[in-house]
Length: 374
Image (cartoon, rainbow, N blue to C red; front, side, top):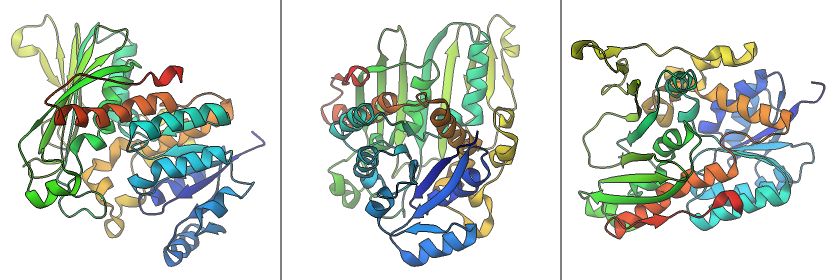
């Protein structure tokens, strides 16, 4: 390609992880960075040799050389910054979740269509090596008919800054909704969720959300499948776990209970003691351009002196970061929707938002908007 995509990264905390990937991607130009704190902006810009720097997001969007923005700002800023970028004629990749309200999800889907630009929510789990492994089994027919999907995201967020304390568990649910919807490209139709237990009063009062655990069932549209997902953030004793499990008629895949152990494949119609078998999940760097394959195994935040909580607790996010960047850039080069696109991202994000509403209503069934036809 003679033309490369000029990418600007917004937010340089976790966002710094993606800078060297874009710098080495054959069809991307890591053009600009944006950070409100000028000292941090210049430190990162100097470290990676990026000349174009902005402390103002509006100034960045006014730059005609910027083709696409990759937003890594705090969750409360996602919707506003996404809408501004789309309306300024920029493509958008945004870290999860898409927004904090269903109304903002609707607005983003509409703005994507009106602008003709691409939107991708950078959901790590659907590009992690474990998900790619299960996807490969499914596409080869080894799972047989998929009968049920399950996922969890349990994490101790005590001590996390800013907006995290007391956050309703399902308000950050895309890491478990994404894989159960994404494997078969299913659309969530309605959800029912129960809250269980209570967190400390000082945390509960921040968002008026008392629950220690929220567990939801998702019914998928035009499918005989449903999925079960559960989340916890505070006052639950559990090692970090982002699990994804799928049960098929021929084979089933189960996540290990302890981080670092191998997952299990169950194969039907074998003698009972031979049904389960531990497997090693392969890496899928061969899906990527050679220049960025190494990033499935290491990144900026692997370094002991440069740790980031979301990366350390997340086990490196399953080697997903170069796959996310490659999917986004490829979609722009090929003029196609990325996965997940705007309506899929809105659907996954809204499952969590509406699941929390359901929990507050004692498990009421709540319908999702039809984002696809907006």
